[in-house]
Amino acid sequence: MPITINGSAGTITGISVGGLPDGIVDNDMLANTVTTGKVLQVQSANLGTSIQITSTSYVTTGVTVNITPTSASSKILIATSFPIYKSGSNAAVDVTLYRDSTNLGDGTYGFGQFANLGGNGGICGVNLQFSDSPNTTSQVTYAVYGKINSGHNFYVMSNNVAANITAMEVAA
Image (cartoon, rainbow, N blue to C red; front, side):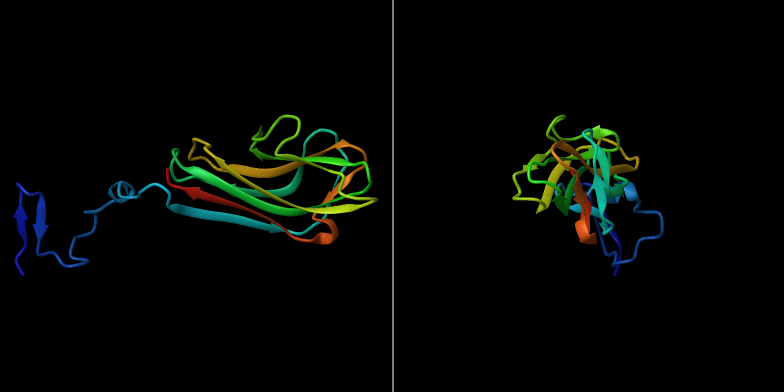
């Protein structure tokens, strides 16, 4: 089949799949065809070592994931789930999500406070989801932080029940 170039219509016909020489289509041309909302990559971590939190200031729980966005305009969707166990009946626990050193939640209560979970020792499953715009193509670390708001200490991943955190890069 002959190759036909129609300059006024902007078309080329007669080229079969794989018929272009190397170097004709590059990554920049392919990136221009990506539409918004497509998942570009997924990074996740499963953790299972119990961590005791005794601080009244936010400290890391060890539930972390790293991701390096391919585009500065991408959105990063973070989803995490983990169990917490409070050691006393009057304990109140605050949890939040950090991007590197930036608290993405409320400065005091983070993404939520867990209190009144029952008598001595209450367990609760925590699920957090957040859409972030880190505006970078450098690696970022997302981490769950926690603190005691009042009362006793608490444990993340109590009895070594696994925690999961997932970071999904979505084309903006």
